[in-house]
Length: 219
Image (cartoon, rainbow, N blue to C red):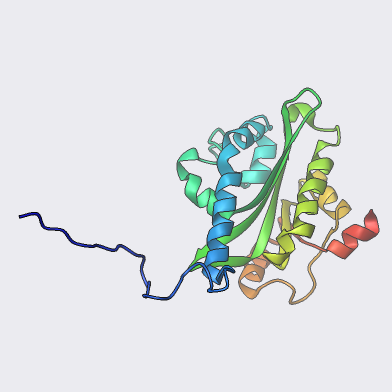
């Protein structure tokens, strides 16, 4: 005898008649907006090999500024392709700038931790790197401007605080940040958990907060 049955497989917490990602009027629910954002980030993260090539071209000292002072495995990839999923979940935006000869010259990444449970962190951070062959030609400034243009238009609705943290020995990075609208944080401006990290590393690192109005006044 041919047995037939109807089976339904849903997701955890799913209820009949309750849509998880879309409201009745067609708008996205909070969970739906997060899912759309994660899909956008996953698409943005596909070119990690291009980023790794830019980082690989840096000097050891420049890599230490990115990896950390005590990092010893400087030949490891900046982004491990095997960890593509967490990378895409944390990546808010990436811009890669090409040189006049068509090669990848500089990149900027804006990071915002995905905290699970359909939430993102309150602080986003900046990573900027320029290929060794193209340093000193203004590519770093251009790519930062492009990245901040995106943040002014879209990113500021995703997180209220954008932080540029740089090793104080990396004077070029600190100057580039302050040139483009970053400043010292005001008292109580940073979330308490992030402030604890700032207090711990403030002797060695500069933590600068992005101020769109300050950037406008400089341009």
